[in-house]
Image (cartoon, rainbow, N blue to C red; front, side, top):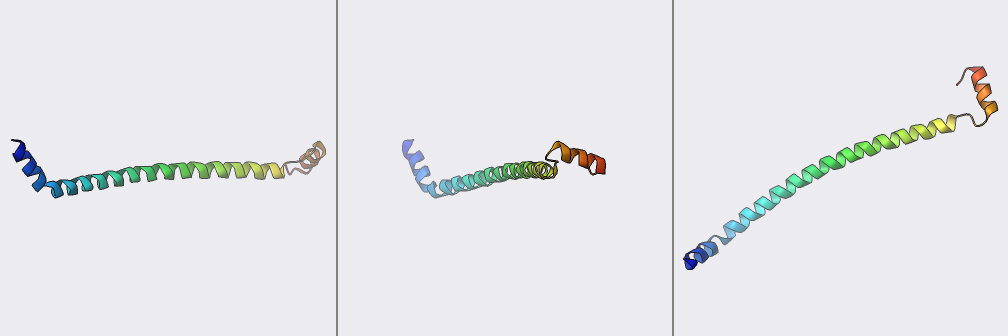
Length: 79
């Protein structure tokens, strides 16, 4: 019995290795695709965060520095 199994295994070794390589390749491609999807989502979130921070910094730069500046803006109607 053992000789039959070893003879079958040795004659089909290359075929088994090929099927294993194909399975590993498909698995790697699927895992890579899911990882790239997660990376794209993270990139979109990071892009939104940076846009919000830039808008906040821009608003801070345009803000009045003192109370007198605020009063002048309110009187001119620019605020």
